[in-house]
Image (cartoon, rainbow, N blue to C red; front, side, top):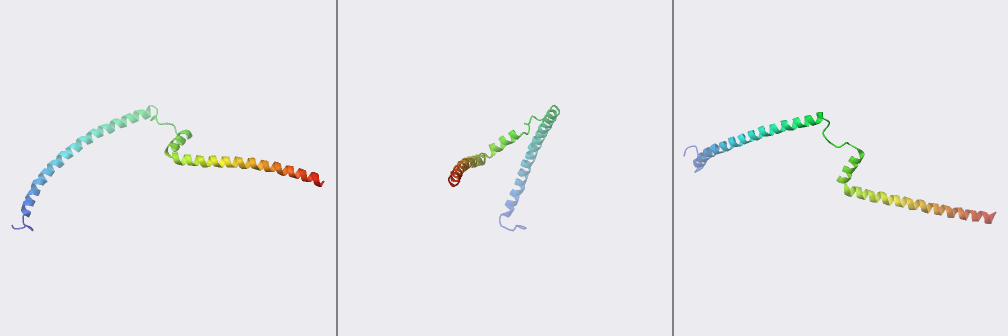
Length: 123
């Protein structure tokens, strides 16, 4: 066994030669399948390009117009929890401001009543 580093390595080497041929056959058939798929996909891409080109020439792609309502709807759909939390905070602040303004008016009326009473007693 000249040139062999281990006992029985010659058998493994012979097996590799046979396996390499089998692998080569598999690789060739795989390449043929990929080439056929490429040709089919190439035709599909060319078809798609022609359809899109015709659609653009004939009046656009059919996409929705970019309006504020469209953007708002998409934003709300993507961020439901954050929008709900923000709405609760804004509603709470609005109610708080309304109550504060109402109480300030009541306090101002009472202050005016006390001032008029004081001025009537002093003068």
